[in-house]
Structure formats: structure tokens, C-alpha cells
Amino acid sequence: MGLKKKQKNVQVKEQKSAVDEVFDRRKRIKADFSFRKAKPLLFIAAVIVGLITVALVYYYSPTSKIKAISVKGDYYLETDYIKELSGLTLENRYYLTFDYFIEKEIEKCEMVKNATVKHKEQGVIEIVIEEEEPFGYRYGEKGELLLKSGKAIELKSEFLDIIADVPYVEGFDTDELLVRLAKGFQNVNRDMIEIMSEITRYPMSYDENTIQIFMHDGNYFFASFYSLETINVYQQIASDLTEKGVCIYSDDGLTVAYTSTCPWNQIVEEKEYWVDELGNIVINQYGDPVEKKYYTDGKGNYVLDKEGNKILIPIDGKDNYEEAVNQNKQE
Image (cartoon, rainbow, N blue to C red; front, side):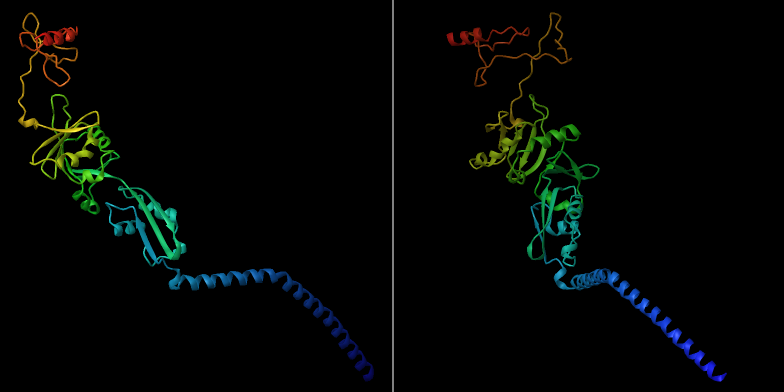
């Protein structure tokens, strides 16, 4: 009996070993399959970890930082102020600087018309700006800088140095007058603006909005909104002057500028007005008194009749100019 039990035990032990062998084989096959299946993912993970490691090493190395910030196109604005607007320093990472966003930050400044940011070689960031052009400044409730675009912007502390290069403007308070004045300055050279001291209105009989410009050298320049660019030839005229306080006038034809008696020294002729048979001053359709006008020749001299009197232009518009000229020739 004892011998039989022993044999039975041996058979059971051998049976379990065979089963274990089958399970072990299956486990190995499954593990091998799982490893082969996961191998591409492991490779990708290894690459990602490697890239992150390289990126971190580069990020914290000095070579990743901006080497220099170049600013071009600034004339009125300080270079350091442009850098401040950009938010860039030499501590910023070169490849983590995005041009578009930097440009938009700089363009928030009202004195910047356009900004372009570029990555250059050797770690250099280049900023090129196009400034708004100022032509003057004024003080009202607050200081304002006047731009050729027709806008008036607040005279902030960052812009205070600009007023040394532009004249003080007074008397163009409405939006319409400011826009017309700005348009008149469109073609005036920057170097001319820099030698202007003050701009005011000086009403003339022919133009109540005549512009008077007091120059740094003590002379005066008079122009209309349409003839302001004639001042670009001011230096050519002023260089021949031997005295100060001279008045120079622009020609609306944009061809010449000439010297003449200053308006405050001119003899003012008393105006004559047409009257009706009852002695009342004749009023035109706009409600203004009708002034008497006399014929003049091409040089501005009055045409005289044979008695030496000025020839009146008829109020009814009938032209007797040829007759007046012929009479003058006969004399």
C-alpha cells in the first residue's frame, strides 16, 4: 500500500511541471509580443526625452539668449524707448521671440506708424520702425503733439524731447483747421520744420486763415494752407537778407516766395462800398457789404482814366477793362 502511494505522488508532481511549462512558455511569448509591440513607442519616448533634455540644456545655456537688439528708423523716439516698448532684453531667448507679437506691442505707441521685427544672423533681433511725423505742439487743457496725419496726441513725458524740434502752434483750435494745417505740412521738409519757432493765424483781407510762421532767425513767413510747401525754399531767400524781421510771402502757385512789407507796416486803405440811390450800403446775397473794386494791370498798378482817376469795376459785372486800358494808353 505504501509503495502505491509513492508512485501516485510522483505522477502528480510530473503532471504539474508539464502544465507549468506550458504556462511559462505562453508568458514568454506574450511578454515577447508585448515588447515588440511597445518597441516603437519606447523609441519615440526616448527621442522625446532626448529632445526635451537638449532643449533644456540649450535654454539654460548662454548661447540661447539674444546677442544684440538693433533699432533702425527712429528719429524722434529714443532707441531705449523702442526697446522698452518691444519688451525685449538680452535675457530673452532668441528662438522664443515671436516677431508678430513684438511688432504689435511697438505699434501701440501713437508715434509709431509701422514696426517690423526680424531675426538676423548671430543672435541679433532687428527692429525697424516708421514714425509718425510731428509738425508742431500746442497747449490747451493738456499738451498735445500735432502730427502730419492730422491727429493730435497727448504730449507724454516720453515725447517731451520732440518739442525742441517742432514749433509751437496757436490759433488752429477746430478739428477742421487742424486737419487743413496738417495737410499743408505734408510736403514741408523736416529740416525746415526744425527752424520754425511759432505758428499762428494772421488774418489778411484776402484770407482770414493766413498762416504766420516766426522763424528762429527772426524773420516771418506768410502762407496759405495750400502754399505752405513753398517754405522749403526759405533758406535760399533768407541767405541774401542783411537784416532781421523781414516778411516773406508764399505764392499760391507754389512756384516762388518773395519779400515784401510786413502786414503791420502796410498802409491800410479805407474800403469803399457801393450805395444805392437812398444812400444805403448795397448788400450781396450772402449778407456782406459790396466793396468797390478798381481795375489793375498785370503788375498790380491801378489803371487810370485820362483824368488820372482809378477806373471803377461796374457792380453789374459789365466789363469795360479794354476801354479803360485804351484810355490809359492814349494818355
